[in-house]
Amino acid sequence: HVPIWKRSPPEWKHDPAKDQWPTVEEDAPLHETWAELERMVDLGLVRHIGISNFQPNLVMDMLQYCRIPPAVNQLELHPYLTQDRVLEFHRHRGISVTAYSPLGSGSYTSLSLDKGQGAGVLNEPAVAEIAEKHGKTPAQIILRWGLQRGCSVIPKSTKRERLEQNISILDFELDDAEMRRISDLNCNCRYNDPALYANLPIFD
Image (cartoon, rainbow, N blue to C red; front, side, top):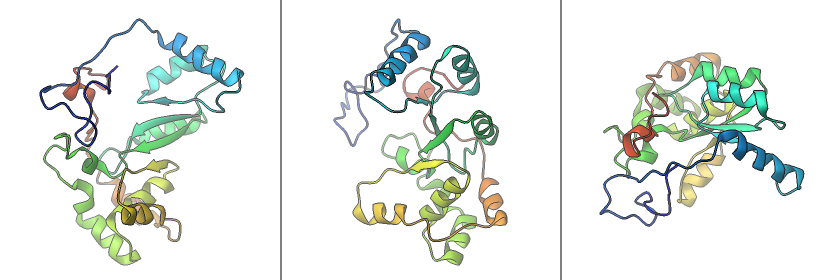
């Protein structure tokens, strides 16, 4: 894992002297870790337990040994990384999916991990046209797209105006053509890739 307390993103307590995040390998098998989380449920300390960045092979393995299946898997999902088959895999098994970084590259600009794209998908002409049609911002269109795919979406913002905009996506709906048009922007572009910043190629 990456010890965030030692080297955090720029908006946190960042140590610019370290050019790469440190990684720590610990002797903690996933099945033992999950058993401890299940124990937390048994003790009434938590209601639901979940996972993050688990690809289907890890999920399939977990479903063979777990007593309590994961309620949710948190994954990077946005129009440049739609992961349609992964989403369908979870849907078929009754596991909810939460989309982190649902607006794409913007969250990674300050980390220099945006691949030079800046606002990225928010600048796409297709998104701008759909936004104008509905009288919404490009961000609201993308968040609505994610919601209509059956995901919960968790955009990050510290600005009150953006927070209010992000939550105001329940008063309109994208039609099938608009949904397809946004999905067609997919280029399998992943921003949160630990292979780049922590030498952990978990998605390779």
